[in-house]
Image (cartoon, rainbow, N blue to C red; front, side):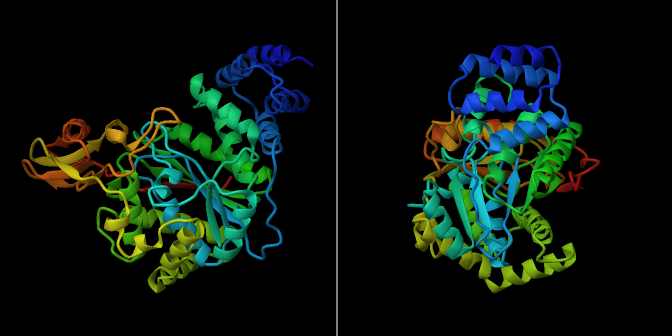
Length: 440
């Protein structure tokens, strides 16, 4: 069997066999296939797609390219949540301790931000000392003691995905649904999960802007996850404006601490609402609750008791982070020295937000990365004070850019001001936070 024959077959729109896909992925893992051949197959898949059988086989081959963690000796259901990413999307920081405090074991393997989107690992690393590169034994130890662990993908977990992901970014094939599905499910499946909830963002700040394609991706993720033995559910959620009030790593951590303490700002409430909804589905899929209503009751009780906040603090200590951040976040989190107000250009109503541009504006002053190896300034960010549908007066503050360089901060503020559209009439419809739940 030769790589070029497999490439040619997919190039011509034919279906690949299990043997062909497994041969190719093994070649990727063992570095027997050249990058230019891998890139050629990625483009052929991007252009011609894959049927369900091919997608399933690709996912399983990538899943089995490395170790599969086994936590069957831990007498709790194992579940996780994954988001396709957006601006201000910080729900993992709330969901993991909240669900763990309810009795679910959460072995969360997370990623970093790229382009206009944020990454869970970057947010956590804004807590001084917090480690996201735990060894397999450390990973298990934290999981057993705390109930959840947050870590990056190691070289042992789905190594084929690490290679393919890097080449997908370099070859403009990131948006291929079969490749997205295989990447997500292979990484999550390697964590030994029983259940998984996937937050598929849709809107102008999402990876998938078109709702039909986002829905297709959600169905593909759910179908493949279930076929791999992971009880899987997807929610389509809105990304037509930043999620919550804070954008930027340290500022998002502070917002999550405030929410877990019960200090709920109206602009930040969507973060809590979405976190609780995703958590409720995790409890149901894990078998701890029979209905979403009872799950919501349990979650609210856990929040009110402070158990979720305590679980978060124990995790921070276990993963080497500074525990005093919970008592005085302004002292121990890296926060920017300067600020620039973003004013409404005219009176009226916020009708639209170019969410991607908001993300890019903060990335440009150090809050994000273009390449995965870029260094992030965790202190910079944006605090949104207006949401779609809000009435604004002339020169009213719609947000604040937090920066360390005033010149760059003013440039970001100008970009963000232009990203907020103000009309004379309120919008005919305010985006719904949760659009659809997909079970199959």
